[in-house]
Image 1 (cartoon, rainbow, N blue to C red):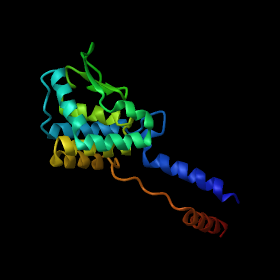
Image 2: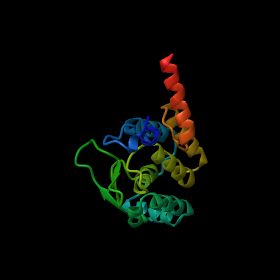
Image 3: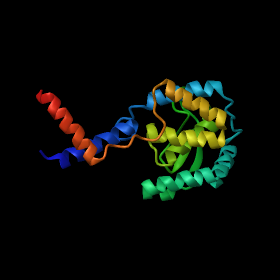
Image 4: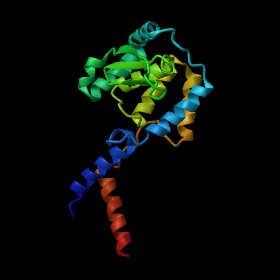
Length: 196
C-alpha cells in the first residue's frame, strides 16, 4: 500500500481542518465569528473616534507598537507579499443604504463606515485582516485576541475569547498532525479492525 501519498493527503486535510475559514472559497466561520463579536461589543466600552483623522492617529499608534511589529513580522514570514502592508491606510466611506459592513479591507487599506464603523474594535478587526488573515478562521481569531488584549485590555480579551468559545470557535494553537510512523500505525490498526 502507498502510505506516503496517503500521509501527504492526511497532512493537507489536517491543515484545512485546523483553520476552516481560511482554506475554502467560502469563509465558513464568518457568521459565527460576527455573532460572537456582536455579543462582545454589547458587553464592553468601545470608544468611538470623532472623525477619520482620529482613527488614523490611533492606527499610527498601533503601527508603532511592539505588538503590531511582532504580528506583522509573523505575517511576513508566512507570506512575503505582506511586506507592503506594514501600515495600511485608513479611509472613511459613508453608506449609501442602511445595510452594510462597519468596515472592510483589501489587505492594504482599511475602509471604515462613518455611521457605525468609526470605533476602536472595528479598526482592530480590519487591521487583523491586514496582517494576512483575510478570513475569520482560527488564525484570524488568535491574532484578533492578541490585538484586543494589547489595545483594549486583558478583560476585553477574556470576554471576546469567552464569546468565541460559546460558539465553539477555536482560537488557540492549531493541533499538530501525527508524525508519519504514528499515522502508519494508526492506519494499520484501523485496517486490521476492518478485517475482523
